[in-house]
Length: 177
Image (cartoon, rainbow, N blue to C red; front, side, top):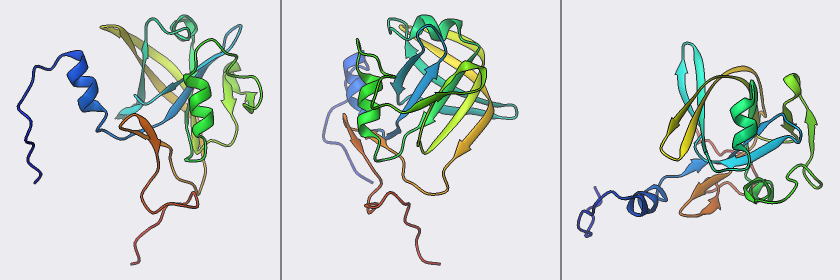
């Protein structure tokens, strides 16, 4: 076990942000219909329940995407592949048309934008929104999904994009049996 030489500190927002940088997270892009459609990069995607199936994403209430997500009946969650770092940056940038070229997408079921060539996507029906501090936790039930049979996820760790160790060609390496 690794022992820390740092003394414990109060868990204020800066200390918590620093600690959470040590957690590797799957990078997702969440999209919602609207005029115009919206989307944002999130690392706060998780499975909440399998019976019934429920997932969650978190979004800052001050985000430009929040008004559309607050009204949306459906959203799509896209798990990005390792080679999609630029797409993640696009959807993390404020003040631009995130759906303009080179972003490739189509209008999916329920009018929700579906991004092309992602590792996986889920079309979800929003079942609840819970305000917690300066964020909303959006709880949603997956209704449809698609995933690739090969590929490696884009991860976010210590303030930068990363991939799985030893994965140079976008495929997950499995140990020999």
